[in-house]
Amino acid sequence: MAFTDADLIARVLSREDHNAFAELVRRYQSPVRAFLARMARGDAHLADDLAQETFLKAWKNLGAFRGKAKFSTWLFGIALNELRGAARKHKELSSEEIDELPPEPEESAAPNAHLRLDLTEALKALNSNERAAVLLCCQNGLSHEEAAEALDCPLGTVKTNILRGREKLKRLLSL
Image (cartoon, rainbow, N blue to C red):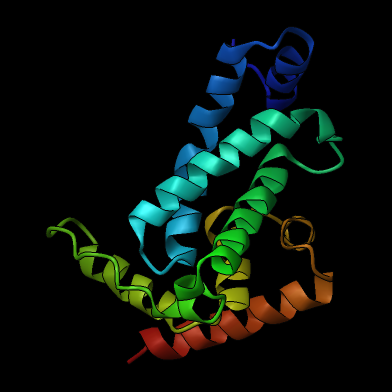
């Protein structure tokens, strides 16, 4: 029997069940890390560090989770705040300079490898707000409302960023 996120959260809060939290980490570590890696322009080390900090903050602040949104929405919000915090702490990672981080290393020839690399490069052409909105909604399946909550911005802004981001991606990938 698979537990829902709400069941696992309840177990963590009522019993400090480390195994329940470990299951939440297993469910979301790959999407959170992938989101952070793409937001950090392919810097896997930074993404790993920020993902770890994200889950530590989630553990410490799980009692503040009110369940008004999905757990994943709350978690992506923490991840984005960790990325923003890293940008503020490190001059070399200012919010505009995140877009200048070194590209992700090329991977071996796997099925659709060129398409994936093309998409990775095209995502780098988006500004950080467009990239975040597109990744949250198109890659991670959040609704526009959930993305607005995770990004802490108005719904209209998310919709605009997705529209602009998708248009840029279409132009870049149709060449």
